[in-house]
Image (tube, rainbow, N blue to C red; front, side, top):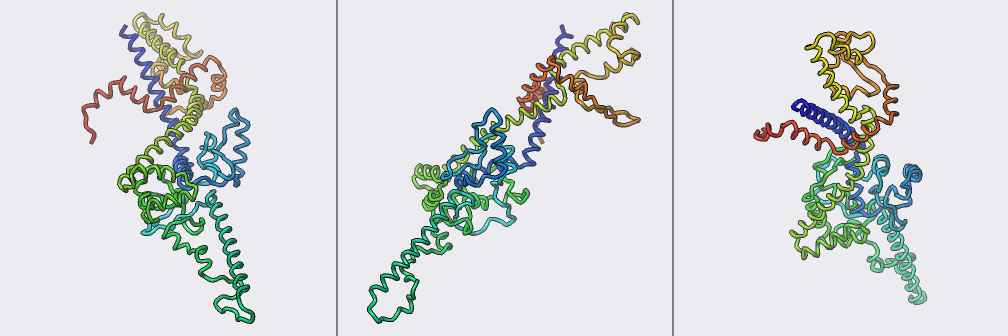
Length: 457
């Protein structure tokens, strides 16, 4: 009975350790991809761009977007867009709406992150302006053209009125030549950008910075460059609230900032108004409200990100499982067979050489049974489950590492339906993650009981 319990304990510990190591490998590969492509940082700033600056224009579809859309139509989810697209008037979201968009369009498409700056936060920020390639920028440009047209029409009308009302033979006004209106007539239509920035207002992209860029100015002291762009992938809610308060103070107050954000068609204006009304125009309560709102948004964004990454982990887990040929069911059979093998060796030691005959069937033809027994007993079952990869290496003290190719046997193993249930069990186990299997291993091996009384240094 004790021996049977020992077999089951060995089986459980071996499987848990194997799942832990493979889960660490999957997590490491995924983290390496995310770090290399800057996906986490781009995901955050795509959300911030959408929330603070509004949607981007939908008419600038790149070649990458067209290729990905074509690939998407080939799949079963052809109706799921790569981005949350809308009409040209409303623009489209920078935040991808599919796994393909997160790991293809986001890393290799237009970078939503602000440019990195080595300068400390400025004492006075530039005025608020529409973000480049956004719907708000097009709207500001259209309004500017309309204002110029109205100014020209009013100047022409003023000149015609002055000419009609002037008596015959009257000399022209040297301060009011032909083709020029009085300064008082068009003063309300022409305002200097510096004056607009000081008193609030929305400017074209080349005359100020967008809300997301103003936010980055307040955070760049904790930033470091990554290919010329910011690498910030996490913003503390308290720091975000302080940055919004600083921007509002320089912009002429919270109400002026909300008015201009509304003119920019920024989604941020609505939650800002709700928090401002709930705070009863109290700045301290308003800051706490912005902090709580941003904290909730980051939790929602994290859930969305993990949902996309989960499918990537499924793919990586499948690749690792098949690459190592990890059949969990076969591992149990190997362990029981090795235990029976050890029992036969024990019988050989007690009964004599006649007990060695059943062991010859487990050895290669012509191999010395004693050498075969030594090899089997010196190779634990846990090590054997990692020997089914297409490439293996053996270490020799004299000759060094020796590499061997087992592609044919590996492919036959993958093509055998008898191994598929074991592969599926391994894949499902890897989806639980390394922290889960580490906790199970600590509980089963008693590591927690031995380390619970110690105090970390």
